[in-house]
Image 1 (cartoon, one colour):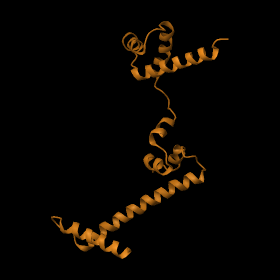
Image 2: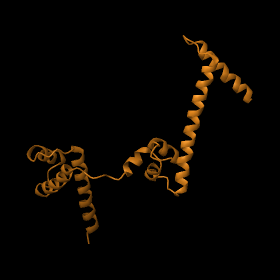
Image 3: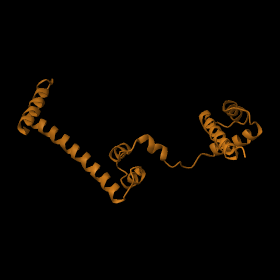
Image 4: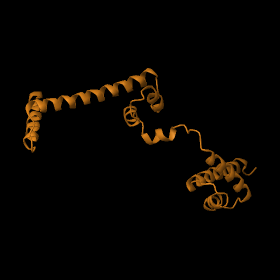
Length: 163
């Protein structure tokens, strides 16, 4: 059966070579095949290194960051594929780095505006920040902060509840 597969593979390579405008000689075809196999071996060795690192550190499946730090040459896509972790969930779990001063200032000013104008929606608060105060902030970020604030207020009301 393996011999049949080998014949089939050699036939397909010869057919592909015959259809080219400038067919390669036998030696060039072998060199190309060796190059492909070396690439495949390199990929498999990289996969084994990633899995060894994960096992050595007794990592949970979501510890992509630790493997990435141990093997900086490997891609996040490959690590996530091998550890069976969705890249989107890894992105959410990333630690947020230092925030720019403008965003921190916008957050503080937003809290002040919310206290002064509790009935304003996120669009109006965003417009106040942008137009009156000159702070460039993302509208979606304002919405997210307001949504979290409303959730906290709702939790307090529910926890106090009727006595």
